[in-house]
Image (cartoon, rainbow, N blue to C red):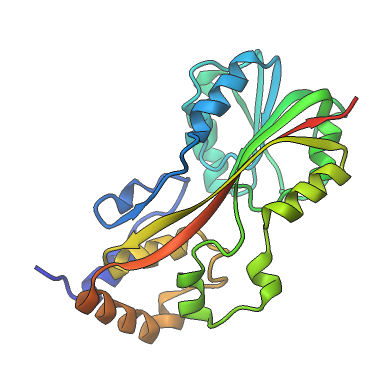
Amino acid sequence: MARAFEELVAEAESVSVDGWDFSWLDGRATEQRPSWGYQRLMGERLARADAALDIQTGGGEVLAGATKMPPVMVATESWPPNVAKATALLHPLGAVVVADTDEPPLPFADGAFDLVTSRHPATVWWDEIARVLQPGGTYFSQHVGHASVFELVEYFLGPQPEKVRRGRHYEDETADAQAAGLDVVDLRFESLRIEFFDIGAVIYFLRKVIWMVPGFTVAEYRERLRELHDLIEAQGPFVAHSTRFLIEARKRG
């Protein structure tokens, strides 16, 4: 039985969006996963590392899935609720969580790590990544690609200029990595289907992934949300596409 717009809105506004766990969306939205399996590949590299850094770890959920931590394991995070959550989750596993502003410089010495990882970093400071890596060290990450979930972004914000649509393009990121002294040894890109089954799922997603529609609030977009609710009720799930790319790069030297 269809649920009322106001009921769905109230539920989605009240739920916590701390951490980087999307299990609240189970049964309400689906997202196709990249074929390569980032967490497994990350875990394989962590098991071989001596000192590793996970940048923008969120609530630590992805890093916590590694089966073996290196002797030195550090994670950074900027958002206070996530810092607390990651600390509680990762400290028992032997990882130290450092509160960081996500602005250069990283609070570590030159060449401190032989592996740097990050899943879906909001910002990528290539010069800093290169600086804290040892010569021959590896950066291994899954990035959000260009024009990701733009069907939803443009539903609320209207058509975006080409410069905005191209942001985070893997070709540009590759060039920036190389300019910082990193050689890209693996690069894979995929476009992945997302379906939102109710307006509550849309609201939760936009509250959690705050850069999609900057400054999003239900009050600001209530009428547009109501229209989308009616559209989903009449035509079925709202379909969008996320983009992801896997990048592995090694520091020269």
